[in-house]
Image (tube, rainbow, N blue to C red; front, side, top):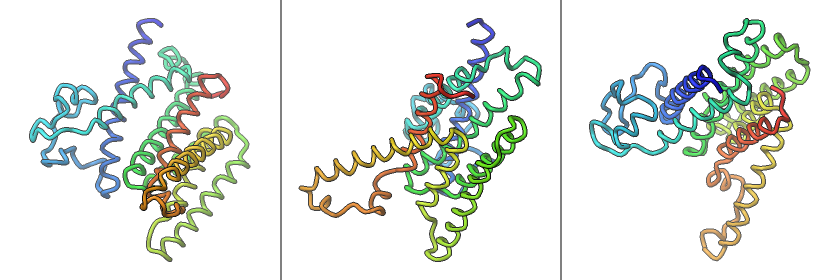
Length: 282
């Protein structure tokens, strides 16, 4: 790898950490119904507005010793971890998609599809991160995140049908499922005055199928079902405890096991493994 591509991937890493910083902000604010685009970043402990030196992804956490500059409150390691993983994920994705400085500087007719494909996958990873982390902490698929997933899915379908001349019929089926689940979710909301967790999971699975393919999505579901089986088995082994003797139903499982989180992790890992093995054509 020459120096130009090294610089290129360093820039990709920096962009990835910036996205990671946005992820941490969005994950904190979305469940609280706070603005994620216009409101200035602030310390959640002392509410002090953060300066530019406090907002440098990865490095600010290191230089500040993992503490707020103003109130000295410890910053959760999650911020550092998400920013770092995001940077590496962006680099690995670009590498696996054979995106380099020369592809970017090629003629638009040659490099355009590859760059657009990369952008769409970045948007999809953003959806997975926001869905998975907010669900893990709140056991709820946020409606705004699901809507974001639907919007980028429709954009991706349009791109595939126009640019790649993809067969439109299977995507019509996906869109029909979107409409059906949204109608059911609206009915559930009106009847029970709350969002349906199951409908949120189903919307997530459809979005995964559109971006990563049916085969990878099915594999993802199998892995998560295996995780659920292992979890329930462990709970059964602890049945000596009075609290754990209670039968684990769907509602109890939803409250204790972050299904959406494991769906997101399993899907992204499976997608990357398949790409590494060379079985997925981008």
